[in-house]
Image (cartoon, rainbow, N blue to C red; front, side):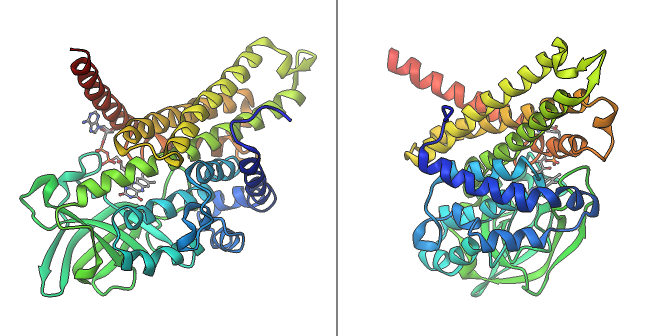
Amino acid sequence: MPWDLLNVEQRELRGLVRTVARERIAPRAAEIDASHEFPWDVVELYRENDVFALFHEEEFGGLGTGTLLSLVAIEEVARVCATSALLLAVQELGSLGLKLAGSEAQQQEWLPRLASGEVLAAYALTESGSGSDSAAMRTTARRDGDAYVLDGSKRFITNAGVAGLYTVFAKTDPDGGHAGISAFLLEADTPGFAVARLEPKLGIAGSTTGELVFEECRIPAANLLGSEGEGFRIAMRILDRSRPGVAAQALGIAQGATDYALEYAKTRETMGRPIGQHQLIQAKLADMETECEAARGLLYRFGRMCDEGADEAELTKASAMAKLKCGDVAMAVTTEAVQILGGYGYIKEYPVERYMRDAKITQIYEGTQEIQRLVIAREMLRETRVFLQADA
Ligand SMILES: Cc1cc2nc3c(=O)[nH]c(=O)nc-3n(C[C@H](O)[C@H](O)[C@H](O)COP(=O)(O)OP(=O)(O)OC[C@H]3O[C@@H](n4cnc5c(N)ncnc54)[C@H](O)[C@@H]3O)c2cc1C
């Protein structure tokens, strides 16, 4: 058996997800992309096979198999269908507020339903005027007796219209900057809440991306996550944990495109031999495979750090590095895959143009690549300071 970054038990579970992905999801991928329809059949498949449970602890109905394996699951699905992989990554993104800051009562009420997939989750931070600069948000939450009243809107929210539970960030103190933001749980059927529209997109076509509107939207005060004013910190802690889910999606897209280009290069002939025998094509394939493996190293390292209890400060940099590397590898590798297929790479009969379109979003959402670089550099500067002080 070839050497592997995973142990025997982890390989077995990866094998199960790989089989489900190849046999049940791969045949649907092109159709999901073409139809732009949310793949409820894939959600049902995950429910039946306990795939959502990979992301949760046993006490809440999960499998308790840890972070590394959950990333491997996203990677395996993304190898065949980026939209279906995003369903997993966003379920985790929308669950993390509860996991990191939820009260026991909130966790008991919601985590088992998220682990089974009975309820889908969403994470609503971005607004039309605030993406990278999330502290500039304008949505407000005013305390009124035993409720908060939300007013405002959110833009670009994945799972809009299909989620049953939204983690929403709003200003409880509009003049308080970062410290004025709080986090809330919002149920989809709350009066005053609506999905105003869904966006047509370049890629991940089966995933919904929508605008949320809150008009005098009353939610119970018990739906506050953590304390008032803690929302920005919660949002950033969630992103530290969730960005590697996007990295896993990106890596799966890159590996899927590499696998396809390799097979194609074995059979397509020019100048009397398979193109895989031409050295310039070999160089592309070698670079693609090497980049995927390098990205995988950073991603799995993050998974291991989580599973071995690394502290949160260390996770911030590791998470941003994994997302940065995997996203850039996905874009570069899928572009090369299209090149290897020549004209066939550009047409929809072959899957690599879909991989290339799907790759682009991994450089944008959950913090753009520019923001990842800022985070990494900030952590580097902080580490240097500690090092110099320790040395003095
Ligand atoms: C398909 C899709 C799904 C999404 N899903 C979600 C979701 O589920 N939940 C959610 O809350 N959001 C979601 N988003 C929003 C996404 O996270 C934001 O679009 C992203 O963070 C960038 O914000 P922005 O679009 O406002 O760009 P801007 O912040 O306006 O950035 C524009 C450009 O300027 C760069 N830039 C900004 N600030 C700096 C800086 N300080 N230094 C250097 N460069 C900078 C950016 O990197 C970018 O290149 C989604 C977006 C899309 C397209």
